[in-house]
Image (cartoon, rainbow, N blue to C red; front, side):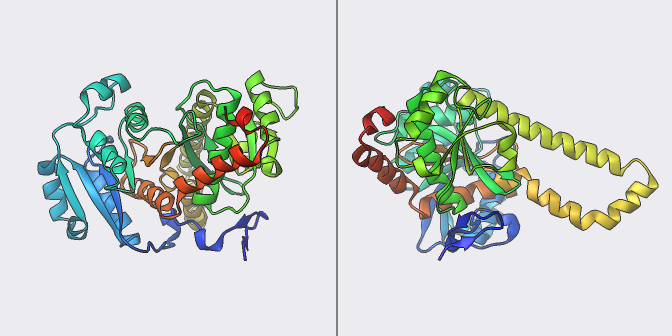
Length: 376
């Protein structure tokens, strides 16, 4: 029987927040699961990558890691992390993709980089997923070249989840595709719905297109056409039409679909607003002795608030649509944030995300009379 959330949504009780380390819920992985890590990717690599893997190993003890990167740089760190050392295999390479490398440059000269070798491990089935905090453009370009897209999917999309008034919601695309046609948006909606079921554990996630208004006549032609197509697909009962920017934080729907340009602007705006709010709060609590005393009284509530909006808890964007699992961690995260990104990769692997996508694509193609028009 499905659990009921306080907001009325149904959640699979066996899937409750396996990714959210901050709530101290342990998700048990049956059997050994291998995750490939780009140890040299990120602003504070390799330190945060290895310490993040060590945190993840505490919560997912049946996981093992392939560590791609500089063995000399990893050696001293692994000596201080004996459990991780025993659960890992180091594959040495001197090459790494720099944060400012262009995707085309990374494709040409990065074949022996830690990022590329980790992706190759997923392609040859040595690992179930790759996690990297490195260059986003390079990671997408390499993953798309090596893993390729799933049958029936034209373009991959970047998806992640956000805190909302009702829990968490999924949003995509967050920057992989600056412009999209109606068919792309339909595919994003389908993949986002499967992502919400896989990572958030929702049984029937609601889906909507991000627009400048809820009225049918508003928005670009591509958005209105995508809405019409979605009403002809198996997602029709869950499709809620259009939502606006303020609906994202309100949690009006579980999956918000948009093009990569709009999605990336919305993501960065939300991150900036959260930092601004935290700044104002800190300044207010330093204004006077009474404010500081008041902080002592409300500190438990503030700590709970801080945990709820902590970006590390929501770290780990997935490249949806690829024939393999690739998770992008924020480049500036710490060890706990990277551990959460590994948790997302484990969730996607254990719960058969790729197979679910294949089933959904087949459903669109075989059960829907207009499936060819819907999927392009």
